[in-house]
Length: 55
Image 1 (tube, rainbow, N blue to C red):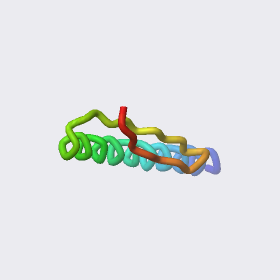
Image 2 (image 1 turned 45 degrees about the vertical axis):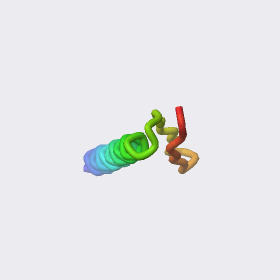
Image 3 (image 1 turned 90 degrees about the horizontal axis):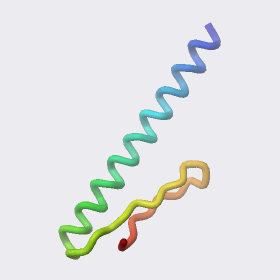
Image 4 (image 1 turned 180 degrees about the vertical axis):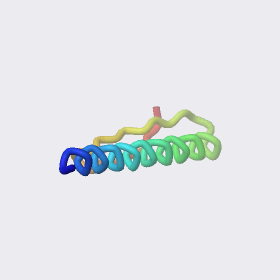
């Protein structure tokens, strides 16, 4: 039972992390459309860090 709860919690955290990555990539695409240059996403979940920068 506890193992199932742990697995569910891990799966939910991964899904949220994946969603954050998708949103950051969408932001990078929008920045590219506005500025005409490529942007990249730099992300570190352990450091709680997300940024979008010029490539």
